[in-house]
Image 1 (cartoon, protein in one colour):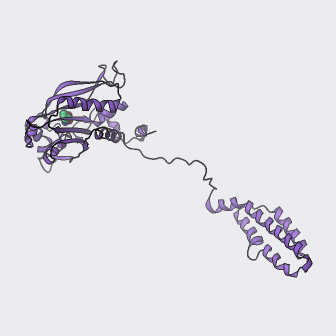
Image 2 (cartoon, helix red, strand yellow):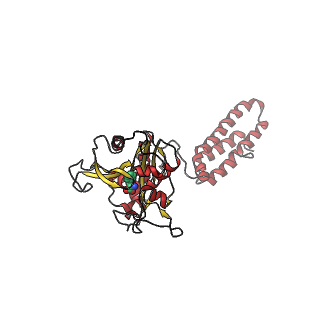
Image 3 (cartoon, helix red, strand yellow):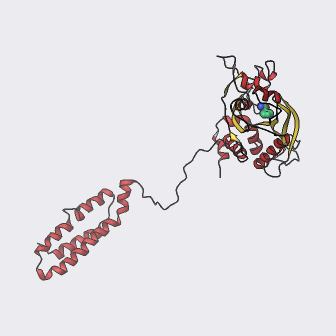
Length: 340
Ligand code: PHE
């Protein structure tokens, strides 16, 4: 029988020539050389037959043979991992970004409006989208014959002639005055509905943010300063504001507020229709009759209210020229608002 020395030489040769073609090949190698009944084990068993004075040398040979067999196996560990787990992954490499959704542009702008007012002490209030006649119209000084109540403009709920889809967030003003004790300072974001033919400039639903502040000694100057603060936060410090007299049944005096055009800075462009100004909201001092509707004495309390369209603010801020884009869910449009 070949001596241990000769056997080791032969097996070393085999190991040096070995090159696995796949993981199964490598596994066969492992079983043949390193398995529990493998060659390394068998040769170790031969040690007892080695003459005592040769044992030391034989032991060293066997040890280095064992290392050789193991090193060869370990040098193909990648192959093994690949077969078991798919491609080898270098976890230190930067990852591939997973495409994530984003907030809708209208929601982003609504959140920004709300947080600007929260900074100066306004709290958020909401109300129902299906509203009754009293909160949407009558309590706001819009009696039965008022043109705003026309079927042309308002969606009525078929089951109950007293119910409408709210046409403005001013209905939340009414609910606040009805339920909360004074003073109140609220910002009310929400969706509103009007019976309009859908086009680039009109939609059957859109979004508003209503503001209401009622306390003792609230003046028109407070209204102007509050809205001026909002505009500089929203559109930048260099933005100018102007107020034009207007009419709303539930405010007196009433005004519309324009800001200097954010695109051309006032020189004249398509957004401002070459006037240098863009209208962004309606406002006024809460009408004494409206306060009386909620048993508030207008001799003691005064207040201001304003209402702005979220689509309008978004349009002015981002130059969106077609209202329909907001509800078409075209990801090419929506992706443009992804935060950097
Ligand atoms: N509700 C009014 C509208 O929809 C806006 C407004 C709100 C005006 C509050 C004055 C005060 O046009």
